[in-house]
Amino acid sequence: MSIQSSIKSITITQIKKKKNQEKITMITAYDALFAKIFDGEVDMILVGDSLRMSFFGACDTLSADFESMIYHTQAVCNGAKQSLVVCDLPFGALANPQETLAWCIEIYKKTNAQAVKIEGGIEASDIVRFLVKNGISVMAHIGLKPHFVRFEGGYKIQGKDTKSAKELLETAKVMEECGVFSILIEGVKAEVARQITQNVGIPVIGIGSGRDVDGQVLVWSDTFGFFEDFKPKFVRQYLKGAELVRNALKEYVRDIKSGDFPNDDESY
Image (tube, helix red, strand yellow):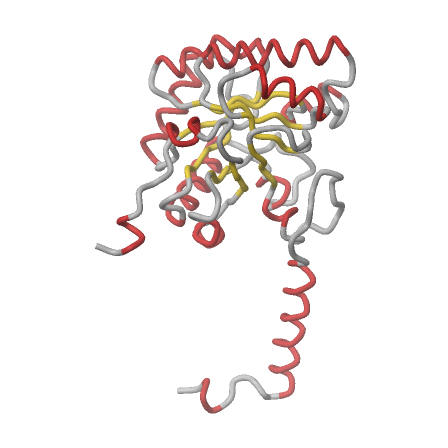
């Protein structure tokens, strides 16, 4: 038995136990190559529908479909054997409980994802409750919800007034009652995110929501500097990835044109 196969995967139970104990780490991935690099270094890997923007070059996430999410989740699961893998449900996945459950069952059957992520507020509670009752582990996504970008008229920070803060806290509590194992909270004022974290008994993972949550998630191409169009305020770049790759590519091209590559040791 290899060392890799002898290491147990991170489970839903282990994630829940980290609440108030240690910060939870999460990052996105869309293929086996990067999933293998991230595997075991982070607690969770999110196969986000953000792939439509960072991977495909679309202007938003709404064009992601069920088949592409299955495809990329299969790839990520092929690379990740330790980190807990979460599959994003694409826009339009919450039409009705039976249809959403059928999609989740297919995700479970065709991939090794341990959970799904659902964007939605209290209006999605019946569907979330139905999924949980049927054995689907759910991560709720509240606050700034990219699926609502056209409805909202843009990406707008949430929790900026008392009414919005109260609604977010109520939504978080309802999601907990429905049985979600964690909540992803995006684009929410830091103080509101802190209050929500303190008032629910499950882990709260933040993105653009301050430090006083149970963990953080970022899109990998933002984190490592591969997406150059713009840098969101909440992103900290840990690598100038695009610059490094571009410089290495220039060396590759130069060596080919000069005849330096391949040399005798690189030839049969």
